[in-house]
Image 1 (tube, rainbow, N blue to C red):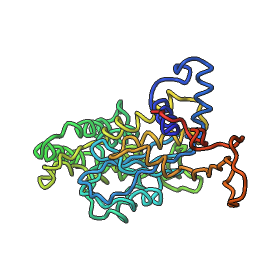
Image 2: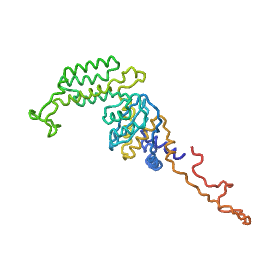
Image 3: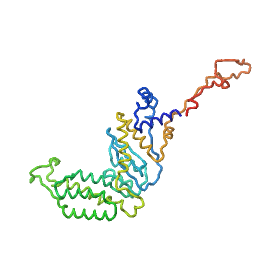
Image 4: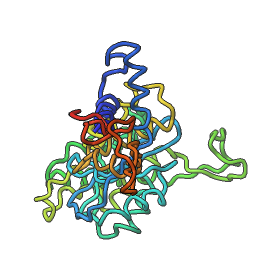
Length: 344
């Protein structure tokens, strides 16, 4: 019960806003660190239930220490997480292997993520986050493009998040086709080194040609790949209308990633291992059935064998009986006890 009370106090601090000094001064903070030091050794793990979820959102959260935690959530509840050094196909595969394939996956456009989806969840439909698509297009063409092609492409990206109905999706597709009819030829134009007045900084030394409008081409391919994969307007599918599929990963970005970022900022200065443990506890406590007592029991050391200090009874019937002695006797209420009786 003592360890359970200490663990509860530890979790209240690590997942809250209060500092150790807020617990009652500098001396209380030092005592808190002494009494809860063993809690850092506990590693919470979300159990695998085998439940099949209709919609899962997946995303990665990067720590400044070089670690990345991959998270899967269902309607705001954490169902699994996986530590890795980067968002690779192997890391995503380790996460997906523990969960049955959902009906729909809402995610961003990481290449390793989609490779793992094709391998482990091939039957799941994919909805690309429309906000991430906007950001990816903006990265290439910017919001202040001076060319009609760049302005039109950024305008298409802005309209993505305004699409709410099937009719709106069809209208957007018509606008995209109109843009292709007007500017697609620009994405195929080439510049040869022997004719170039200036060589771009990103061109390789042995590169003989490059695309003239490389940034425009890259922004166009962001949208084109999502369309070809059928990942753009999955949330508008009539067959999935009853699932209320979101079109963005705002739920996991705002409800999970931002909260973990806030936790690390409130408790800044922790070493790398403590940062990881704090993230693990936050994710575990926001899972479907969190129970710190179960984690404590899994890490509970074996109980110590208490020795009886009372003098053993003599087996010799002729031996004299002691009227008083220095040993402890249960009848006197002086037996060796363990723990703190009556502690809540």
